[in-house]
Image (cartoon, rainbow, N blue to C red):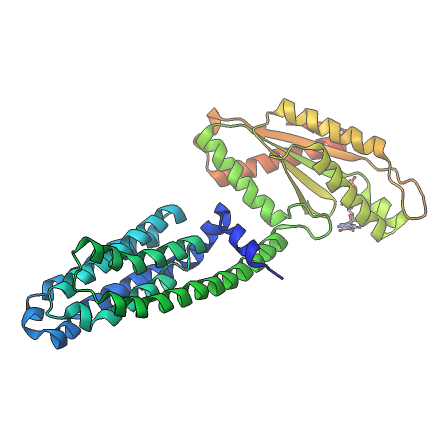
Length: 368
Ligand SMILES: Nc1nc2c(ncn2[C@@H]2O[C@H](COP(=O)(O)OP(=O)(O)OP(=O)(O)O)[C@@H](O)[C@H]2O)c(=O)[nH]1
């Protein structure tokens, strides 16, 4: 069961906030658009309050069209941080715009004091995609800004007592509603992350699966094109694995496959990515590594496996070795190639090197 503390702590995690923003940014933009429509159509209410002054205020009401700009900008914003700033500023300006109109109506502020409730409500929906702290801050801003304006004398007609009676219960209630929304999103986030992990991970070994490996390869080859960084790839295949299966059984074969995944993970750096491509074939993607560095690592893994030995449940020693193919991509001459063709080239070369290692008698490392 998720605690409120866990939910609050998530709001300091950039990845969480970025995902949350992406999940809700369309809604945020739509709420701003709706605010523009509401702001303009309130002209009808202006007429009911003060028909004489309302005629001259049509342009100020139509000026709510400015909200299209932040709606568009938030929809396109690359990060939750810039979107948060835009949203807070938009809310404040929209409220000041509204107040500026009401001030010009005879009895506008006292008659339309209920309309201030719209802003805390809008905050609750508009800020769903942001941190819970931003939700509360935005609520506090739109609740307190009329008080602050009244204190400066610019909003002297605001019926402070009535406004306070309406706004405080509303805002406190909505601050609690924000927590329940945050709890809902937190559950969704955990679920999405579990699904993402499951779809990227090989169930038997816990390392990346082939699908995720393709994604990682694409990421590294694009980095290679942008930053001219080298990138190496190891292809590993257990020698005569069919015999292990035949002699010791499939479950033991599975444990040997898992042992290879563990050996790769144990012997590689944090930046290296281990993936199971299928059956008893694995890949290790090594960002920033040259062929020499990759051969060194491949030899370390090969020796580790050769010397570690493997015993099945009955204590039988299972002899096993691996063959490893090494290939790398190194900047300059790659500049004209596409990301996909670079990836295919790297896999093709590592595959060919693995084939050469098998032909050379197995239990060895070959590079191309
Ligand atoms: N236990 C187990 N076996 C698997 C798995 N996936 C594939 N295999 C077996 O892996 C074996 C692969 O055999 P081969 O491709 O002939 O290769 P090999 O016997 O390792 O021979 P070389 O690669 O040439 O050294 C087949 O018997 C497959 O049934 C798995 O998930 N678990």
